[in-house]
Image (tube, rainbow over all chains, first blue to last red; front, side):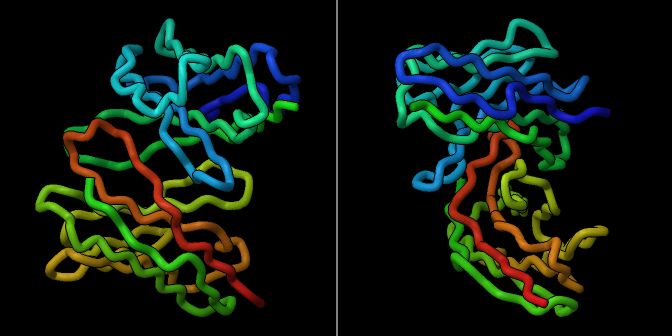
Length: 116
Length: 111
């Protein structure tokens, strides 16, 4: 399996522009997570989906952020308009529910966003 | 989920065992202990998890105290490639599959 695939790996944009980050989870996984990592705040959970349905979006910073999962193999995280404080590495992760917890979240390699 | 406390950083000599402690004194009876690590600029990677028994896999061993208020991750023969941030996380099975990451321990393996 190719693992969790994220794109783009690097994005540099100017303040006010729209940014779209993409994620393809591991086939068959029913959970998908978006995390953000900064030096100041560490790894923060933004939102997660179960069977394509958003379960908890309490970590989404504000209305400028939105996430969708139109099908089991694709998710997007959109920032509109972007601001310099959104600069971070955004990770997508997926996992498969198991009655006996396995604990394994599989992370992508991240999308490094720089907003100038 | 219970909160965890880890030392911010540790050093270990290459080839020696690295013992990374984690305190989770408020852990509940059904909460599992998970360990992940993050090598520089990569996504976090699962290492091991356990409920109350000690666990071992090809990467590491997890020792959980009898009262479950603390645990230790053991890398038996640390290599330079084990240099990473190690996260100890406690989570209940009914919390979905989500994980909340704290600050972790930055392990530096030195030659």
